[in-house]
Image (cartoon, rainbow, N blue to C red; front, side, top):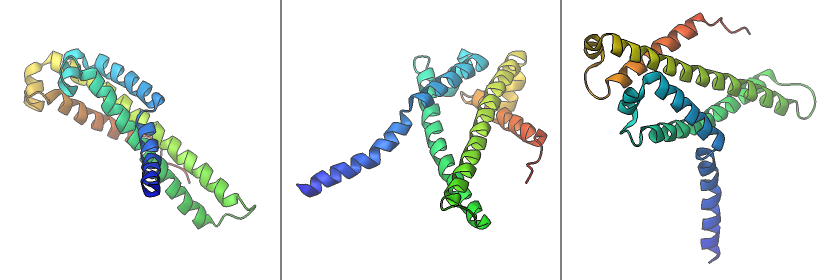
Length: 179
């Protein structure tokens, strides 16, 4: 009986944080806002072709985006902390007993903030790409079909390619980081 209770408690302790991050209201609100902007930028028929039927396209977008954001945020926080620990160890932080901890905390927060800023820029790139693809499809449907195909995923292909191009342009324009 004790083993069963212990196993139940451990599994709850492991599952609860994962479930909480996947259901984070802030993530869901951000996902909903992003999906509305994407739907408006792409146009409803194109948005539906990217995510599913008319009845569930918006819900699928919000669900997929919220899950992806929660997973990415956890991975980014873990990576930021690991990189901060390495950098602070390399510096051999002198000072108080907690100088190393403060160093790690500051660097991890800065790295996570930079990753969040990049995520926001990528979402903006995708919304702009959806608007560009919508206009391209409307202006010359035959050329659009030649470039991206006539299948259901053609609009998604256009958005993906255009968003990658916008991200590459944005990164090329950014000033080099100073050390």
